Image (cartoon, rainbow, N blue to C red; front, side):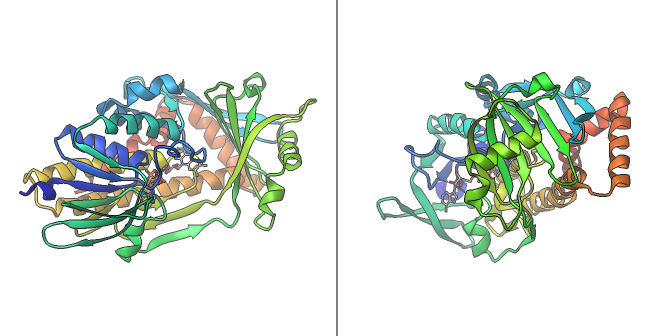
Length: 406
Ligand SMILES: Cc1cc2nc3c(=O)[nH]c(=O)nc-3n(C[C@H](O)[C@H](O)[C@H](O)COP(=O)(O)OP(=O)(O)OC[C@H]3O[C@@H](n4cnc5c(N)ncnc54)[C@H](O)[C@@H]3O)c2cc1C
């Protein structure tokens, strides 16, 4: 095999692209990572994703990333479901119940930006990873022997890289997916989600580090993040017709926070942003030598923290197959198994679960709300039911089921 056909070209230095590169490097496979952002603005990305589930922590551990990010976040073994009326805590789940299932019986609250910062630092010193910053991928071609990726530097210079395979880890707007004419099936919620970053001690009101708060009119998520200063992120729904400038105006943010939890003093609000939530899965994760992973392949509501996590699971599943093919230990149709395994999980678990999560928080029918809450209470009260529930929410079940798909 020529040197070029061993190389995997990865588009996007997000968590999925970087973890894939680091995993392939462990097996001696060289990669070229193209990233449109430059070293000067790589860390200026909007806040998103930070709940890292136990099964994902096991994967970070395999590439030496866990020990880098652990000190930058914190362990959150507990999470709560609340009813905003009251407010009343409905159920508490403790990952300690998974102590015999994993070496990581907690989620790690550590933001995506810290994960990519640490993973990028590892890739930059890894001789098998060639990182091309400020390089925007534009198009590619494929033939029987490999792929040719075209990109442009910020100075307008053309870049051409040859490799054996190309992996689109460039996020939801994947150019590779569009060029392959692969449909991104699903829907987009009409209402955007408002994220407010606030400095306040919610724990004194009984909240855990992660809370899912149901309400027929104004559901919320409430998550703590490491400081300084220690911040919380509160998510609210918004009216699709509202002007974004109005929704994010200081007076309106304060009104939302006071409505959520009245306070005699104004909230110390440090930032806000609005995001659109899509539920979409690519109709195929592979065409020839081009493969989709992470948000390029599937996007979902962040309720439950499954987007980043399932993307990392794609990266590890795919790495195993690419290693086998490039080493000549498997035919390249093993990559179709990646498609079968990870696409099935994206549809059956990630999409289904995130849609259910949102429905649970927004349910308007009082009888159904009561039934849902009773079910959560019953599950939390029974250690074995709670363990099974946690195996699902911590994504062990989906990774195990994927492994069983031939
Ligand atoms: C508000 C919010 C909160 C979230 N919270 C969670 C959570 O708690 N847990 C969770 O699991 N998920 C969460 N998610 C989802 C999570 O952020 C994504 O699923 C995850 O970042 C996807 O990783 P990725 O590497 O596939 O793509 P991305 O993180 O989108 O990275 C793509 C990279 O590709 C680069 N790129 C794009 N186009 C090009 C190009 N043409 N050329 C070169 N480079 C390019 C981009 O600059 C970027 O660096 C959240 C999302 C949002 C919006």
